[in-house]
Amino acid sequence: MNHLLLILKREYIAKVKNKSFIIMTFLSPFLMAGLIAFIVYLTSLNNEKIRFISVLDETELFKETLSSTKFTKYNFLKGVDLETAKTLSDNNSSYGLLYIPKLPLDLVSEKIKFYSKDTPSLTFVKSLETKIEVRLKEIKLQNFGVDLSKIEAAKTYVNLNQESFQGVKTSKAGSFMKLIFGLFSGYLLFMFIIIYGNSIMRSVIEEKTSRIIEVIVSSVKPIQLMLGKIFGTSLAGITQFAMWLILFGFLSIISSYFFGIDLYNTPQQDVLPDAVNQQIINSELQGLINDFRSLPILNLIIAFIFFFICGYLLYSSFYAAIGAAVDNETDSQQFIFPVIIPLILAIYVGVFSVLEDPHGPISTIFSYIPFTSPVVMLMRIPFGVPIWQQALSLIILVFTFIFTVWIAAKIYRVGILMYGKKPSFKDLFMWLKY
Image 1 (spheres, rainbow, N blue to C red):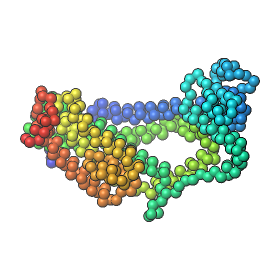
Image 2: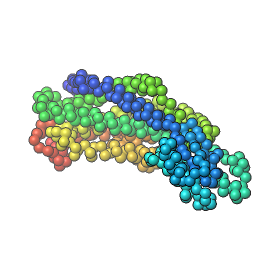
Image 3: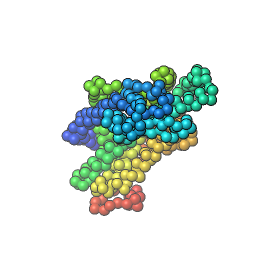
Image 4: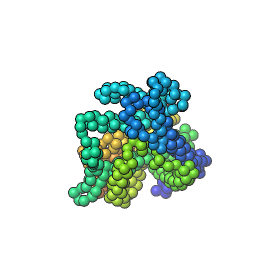
């Protein structure tokens, strides 16, 4: 045990005192926050761009429908033909020209054209199509003798209130909020394993190629050396990640204040009437508040810590074994891909199965399989998973970790002293018998 603690301490101090580790710990949040702030700032500038649209409406039916807004200004042309309208629009640097020919209503929808110098925004085109479709529908209904005021009065926004038999209220937006937590947890674990798992593997390869490992194993058991590297590198990674979160949160607030970005003032709001938007927003916001209150916050935090740590340790033991089996990172690629396949599968199962049916057979089964449970179970917990299921999944994960450490230690014990040969899967299997 003393040797294990010494190796752990050595690995941790060696990592945190490394110049590149220190530089990236403080530089990465600045780069990430600056990049995100810059992208959001450019997006906000693009969203606030005022578009001037020329309109040649030969039917004279869309004057009220195509009314100017804060970000879209319509200029109706009269007494000109199509070619002249194109020339005027091009000379005036208009965003585009909307041409509505004078044809029967059954044909006009297929002949409407939008001319522009560059490819127009998909969001803008969609909003324009919606406005024209609504107006054409109103005109046709009027021709059929339908009273539009009655149709308008009959419009009703339905927000289906969701509630469990125990009285717990949920919403559609709340389901996505829960999925976002699961996705965040899954991707966080995935990135943590990729970054720091590779760090463990590189550390083993460096010591192996420099022959320092031969001196170390003369006084330390291979399994103690492997566990010391795993735990030491993991603690260093947790330290770095905690610093990233603190610095990134601080820099995000400063960047947002510095750029003065207003994320809610965008031209996409022109698609729906303000009253409808406000009604939808208020309803969804109330649903989100109710869903957040119903979340098992303490359960989520505890489960996240245990599943995250156990899942990372499980995969990091494989990385340590791979590092011991090869002489360079190039040879390690054939072994890394099979290791990360279960993680990729877990994320896809979470996205396509948990959201649709979090308590279905597929989601449940994969939340018990130890190689996918750290991701899938974390995605299921916000939807309400009994404690006994969480405990069972965690117990299976812990025992699997112990078993994989035993396997990895046997590979590690032989591999750290093997040089000059590129191992195969058959070789790794043979090493388990030694």
